[in-house]
Image 1: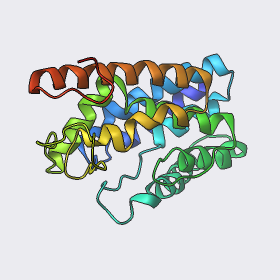
Image 2: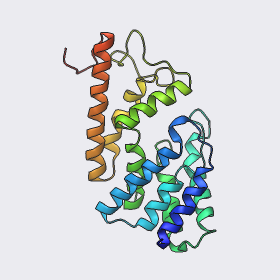
Image 3: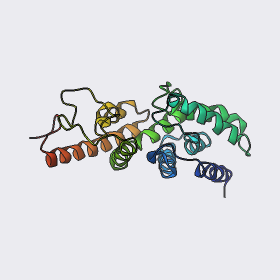
Length: 219
């Protein structure tokens, strides 16, 4: 086992014991973010000693979506992640970069991305909100929070502002369809656009089944 793999193993053991704040932020989510981070790191020739630990630890402190502390969740995770890495045989010169990558990954925190490594972790986390897995996570979280599936009179926000605390499908319009334009890497943006197209196809099929076409869908 390499030195970085040893660090990864310790990070995985830590997050495996963290209680997920909602069904969409469990250990499976973290593992998917790590795998995507690994891919983006390789093709971008980024520093894996920063990106991989940051991906493992990006949700090591979790705050519920409806908590008033949600906007500082990534800062809390960054502080705990760096504290934990400091207990391991981890290069101290990378700690600030890991802290920044974890803190900047959050959509709610709205922190500008200034490094390649932070952009990769942010892209990997946001990609997990898109595509088939993103659709499943959105509906799973909406159900857990007591949201309805779709607005009965205007399912696809054609003539109203999205209210994604009330209706799960609204979250596609409030946030998810906007994610491709926030991607920091070319590969992340291309994959985000591909996954959004899947989600639009899903909504088109949903519209066909309920008898209401989404805006822009073929009649």
